[in-house]
Image (tube, rainbow, N blue to C red; front, side, top):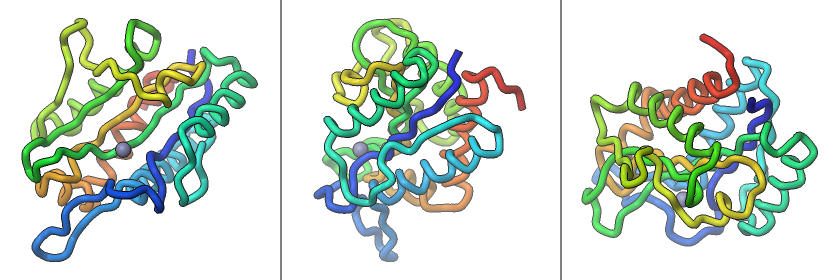
Amino acid sequence: MIRMILLDNGHGSDTPGKRSPVWSDGLYVQEWRYARMVVDGIADGLERMGIPYAILVPEEKDVALGERCRRANRIAKRNGAHQVLLISVHLNASNVVNAASGWEIHTYKGTSASDEYAKVFWNCAEEELGDRFPMRGDFIDADPDWDSNFAILRDTVCPAVLTENLFMTNEKDCRFLMSDEGFKTIVDIHLKAIAKICGISG
Ligand SMILES: [Zn+2]
């Protein structure tokens, strides 16, 4: 049973790239800023639900992956690694503008508890987004998450998932993300999944 959540917000204000195009009306999104807003929104929800959590990178500047993993592992070991779930929040991007759209979740390669937790996230995302955006699954190994060799998933001792919350390089995705409804939806997907995983109903 998961009893504590570690929230990782991808990148930092000094990470190059990692932003959307500037759309016709000047609107754009920076991944580091958005991920921090989402993580803060999730943290507020966890506070309300009484679920212990920690924000791995309170800084605005980028913190190297090695240090992110060290911080995560310190907290995870203190709290019993299998009782801690790390969630890394990102926005997706493609090289070609408007070429890709939709929602993804990643876990490290192979089968682990992370795959079960990812499935819960997937179901919540499908409920919230499935009628409006593609659900981008990788069903080669019978579960919808992508098996990815990302350091934050590989080098952490606790279960870990990484959410790619729509494509900032897609105008429809990006405008949805930047809307109040879109922001709330992204936060809610995470909160609903966490509530299920932690065995809290409602
Ligand atoms: Zn990212």
